[in-house]
Length: 117
Image (cartoon, rainbow, N blue to C red; front, side, top):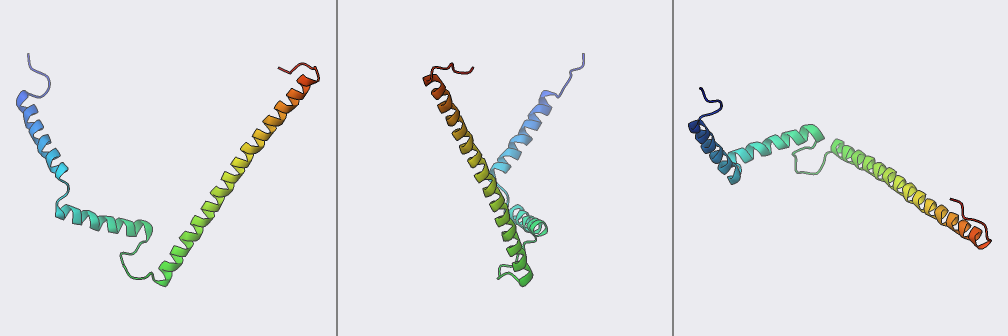
């Protein structure tokens, strides 16, 4: 009857390769791999965010973009702040309404009326 699956020798060979791969991974990237990653990351960021790798002061167009991004961020923060205030105000108002309802019920109890169910 033929066996199904890998042989013991194939399993050992795979385990050896896997141990070597994990050991290499745990040591981290080689200097060449790190440099390649840094280069690719710079290119990716420049393409995605329009960031320049230039370390000098921003040019006029770059400054305009930075100011626009800052303005958009401020508008976003203001909108989030408005929603936060509205939400908190709604919770405070709800809490005040509940307390007023409880006071009304307590007033009914004091006057001898039954409490509604």
